[in-house]
Structure formats: structure tokens, C-alpha cells
Image (cartoon, rainbow, N blue to C red):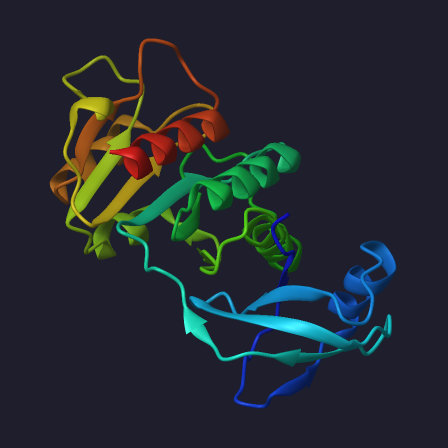
Length: 232
């Protein structure tokens, strides 16, 4: 059975360390791990260490870790810039699933038709962190603060830049494209991007793409796009 993963912000050179209180509680009280059992520690920056529990304390669990090693870097850096949603639960679902797929960056967008701009970053970051650990990864996606659409479009430096929209004009089928190692895709709000926003993106070399023949919810579109880009 795979060893459980736990997050430690700084995996220093010390052989022994005390896990943070919340991590200790989850390890000892929730998972009921005991002295002598092993686990995996990660700092979310690609570093991993196997560790053995020396003291199973629910507030101050002490572990002895082995030598650090590095996880394989991601073959493609995927950035999803996606509109905030009126239904916060749907946006949180997207964050969880995008993290499991292996997205590198998530930028919450504020577009012309974005209905809700409230954003609890501390809660959202915890969802991303939990999804990283559950899917046993060593790379924590970078969750940005909400950003103005025009700013994101104008400052994008990715080799491959895509925008998914529902307007009836010429678009490329996303599943038939070849992607570089650094990709960003823009996903609009429930009411889609405005014509002006689409024009602004295309002026900055964003390629318009189609995500299929059905109209998808924002969070579904984001997840579908992430899955295609990660797989190809």
C-alpha cells in the first residue's frame, strides 16, 4: 500500500523534525499512525523524503527522515487562467481536479462578465494542497490572486497561448494541436468572453480553440482543456 503524503513547508537538513500541529493531528488522530510507521514528506517544490515516526503525538509528531530526493519535473508547464464563478463550490471542485491532473499554475480571472469576485485564498490554497497530497504529487500548483483579464492577456509570455470561447468563428480543435512545454489557456465565465476580450487575446497571439461540440460549464471546460493539454 502506498505511503501517505504529508506537507512540510521547509524540508531542512535536520534528520529529525516535528510536524506542524495540523499535520500531526491528521497523521496521528485521523489516520491513527503509530510509532515506527513510515510516511512521505514533500515541500511542494519537487522534494521528497521518506520518514519514520519516532513519537506519535497528535500535536507534535516527531519523525526521522531519510535523505531528500527530487521528483521528476513536469514535462509541460500548464497554466489555466479561468474566470471566477458565482458558485464557489464549483470553482473549488475545479481547483481540486486540476491539481490532480497536474496543472502548474491557476490564475482566477476577473472578466467583463464575471459575476462574483469574492475569493478566499487561504481556503482555496488548502484545497489545492490537499489535492496535491491526495494524488501523491511533489509539485504544488501556484494559485494566483484574482487578476484582471486584460492584465493576464497583455503580460502572457507562454510559448503556446490559447483562448477557448463559444463565438461562431474560426477555431482550432484543441485535441488536434501540438503544444510547447509552456502553455496557457483562457477559460471564460458563464456568459463567455465578450467579443472585445476575444479580440484583445488574439491581438496578443492567443490562438482560439474549440473544446468540442457541446457548450460546457466553465469548470468543466477548464478541466477538459487541462486534461487534453496534459495528455498530448
